[in-house]
Image (cartoon, rainbow, N blue to C red; front, side, top):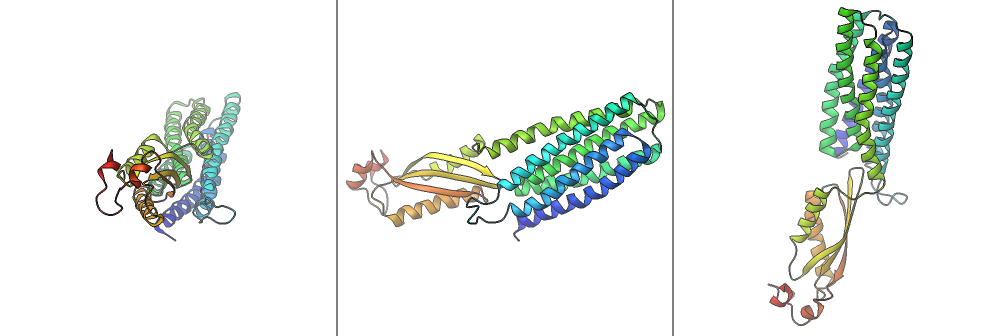
Length: 312
């Protein structure tokens, strides 16, 4: 198991263990207190548990090497996981809205307010720690599944903060209407933060090209090899599958070069690209020059400095 896989595995395990504990605790307190705010947090955590369990599975499957049935690897499993997790967040928002509407129609006083506030405070602290851990792992390993996991815990932190503030205010004012309002606020927040993740997952599944800044870095690396032997590149195609960036292009080289020499140049270009994008899969198609072919054949040396004709 390489270091990235180990980091992702530990982060996914922490997310599962944390979510199991928080889900059981908040659902229990939500039921006995009758608070829609606490109960909504319990529902949210339950769906986080499903999400964490999915991530626990997918981060292991996504890093499997390519095989006969999956010649491009298993990276899309992680993208599908991140989309599924984002949709779970939307489902959580719908459940919370339903519960909040019911409490609007049938307002109820909250029982065991002290226990409810303690439950939310503990949830806030634990969720923040898990959020920071999963986010750091996601950034280091470029895992979309862990990034969504971190997003789940961030939404827990913000939602818990709002619910805790509302419970404290209700304790001193007796305004029971605040409880379902807090539930609605949590639901709206969840939907807002989820939209971008759904968009990102759908773009990746549709094989959209890499971001402009990454494309610029790729072209800059290839352009650094321009000389008599390497005249340029075209038909650059990129996409992302999980943590793997797929990069392929046609490299135009001097037509007088041998197969060995062309292959050596491709190895050098690939090495530079992999230094910039360690998890990339690079595929280079070599093409001989056309317009410059006559110049190359007329005397461009294959050893030492290139002839001036090829630099025109």
